[in-house]
Length: 479
Ligand code: ADP
Figure 1 (cartoon, rainbow, N blue to C red):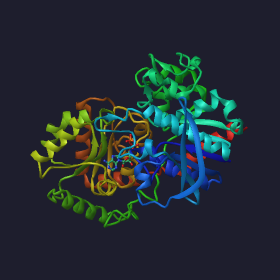
Figure 2 (cartoon, rainbow, N blue to C red):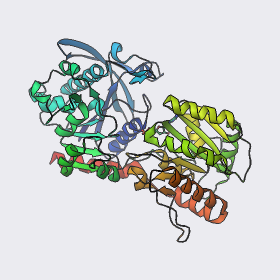
Figure 3 (cartoon, helix red, strand yellow):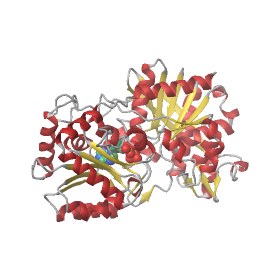
Figure 4 (cartoon, protein in one colour):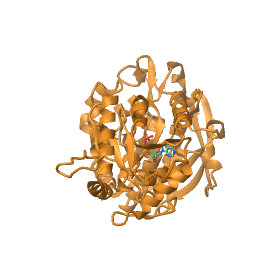
C-alpha cells in the first residue's frame, strides 16, 4: 500500500523526543514489509543546516492560510531504502532556532505555522495520492480535519483513509479562538461537538473526531486515556471512539540502540560477555568526574525535565538518595526549576552526582551503557523509549506502573527469580524510594543480579512486530 506519514519530527533530521524516533524507524520497518512510504515534515533550521543531503524538488505549493495564499517549496531527503522524506519549506515559519518555541514559551504563531504545514502536506499529496494518510500528534491534526471537512478541495485524496496517532495526549494544540480564521473552516466546526474545547480551538480533538482510526503508543496508555484521570479532558471523546482506538507499542531501532555495535561506545558487550559494560561504566565515570568505586552502583537518567517524567519525585527523594551508596548520572533539559535543582545538586555533591543540562545523543548512549540502574518514574508515559533501551543495555529500569512502562518492564521477584526491573505502583516519593532500595539491594546480590541483567537484555521490542500491527490496521481500513 501507499502510505504517507505526516509529522512534525523525524530522526535523524529533527527531534525533540520519541515522536521523531517513531517516524524514522516505523517508516523503514513498514517499507521492509513491502509498503511504499513517504514522510512529510517541516524544513526547520536544523534540517536546512544539519549537513543532510537535501534535494530541491520542482514542487511549488501555494496554500490558503486565512485569506492569504501562502507559498512554500519542497525539499527531499531519503531514509531506509529510498523512502522520500519531503520537507515543506517556508523559511518565515520554520527557519528558526527551535521547533516549537524557546524557554520563554511557545512561538506565538504556532497555530499559523502548523495550519500552513498541514495544508501544504495535503497539497503535496494531491499531486501524488496515497492509500493511507497517517498523521501524528497535534501538529499534523489539521491534515485529517481538512481532508474530512473539506473533501471537495482534495478530490485526488477522496479514497485515502486516515490514521491518527497520539504520541502524548498532554500536548493537544490548544489555541485561542482568535486564530480560528487561519483554518478557513466553516463556523459550524467551532462548536463543542467538533474543535471547540472550553472556548478554545483544540486541534487534537478534531483529529480524534475525524480520523478513520486512532492509535496510541502502548496498549495500557490506550486504556488510560479513556479515563478521567488521564484523559486530559478528552476521555469522553476517546470513549466514543473506543471501537476505533488501538494501542500499538513503539519499537526500538536495534541498529542504533545495541550495546554490541553502538558506535558511540568505546567498548561493546552482549548478554554473554559483560566486560565491556564494566569498561563503559568506568569511562562514563571518568567523563562525568565521578570516582570509580566498583561497589557503588550508578543510577542513570536521560529525560525531559518536566513533571510528566516524575522529576518532582526524584527531587523529593534526592536527600535520601544521597544517604545511600549510589552515584547519579543525569542528562536532561526542561523546566528551569528542575534544571537549577540538578545543577545545584551536582555542585553540592561533585563526587556523587554528575549532571549535564542539554540534549546530547552521544552521552545518552554512554549513560545507557555505563549505568547500572535507570530511573524513569513518570507520572504518565505513553510508551517511553529509554526503559526499552535500558533493558537492552542491561541497565535495570526502575519505572512507574503506567502506560508503556507497565507494558514493557516486569517487576523483579527475588523469590521466583523473574522480572526485568523494578516497578513502582503508586506515584509517591516513598514508593519510589522503596523501589530504588529494592534495586540497590538486588545490585549487591551479584549472582541474581547477573541473571536479572541477562533477562533484561534478552527482551525484544523490535519494530518489526509493531510494524506488522500497523500494517494489519492499514489493511483493515483498505478493505
Ligand atoms: P518523550 O518522547 O516523552 O520525551 P521517550 O522516552 O519516548 O520520551 O523518548 C525520549 C527520546 O529522547 C529518547 O530517545 C531519549 O534518549 C531522548 N532524550 C531525551 N532527553 C534527552 C537528552 N537530554 N539528550 C539526549 N537524548 C534525550
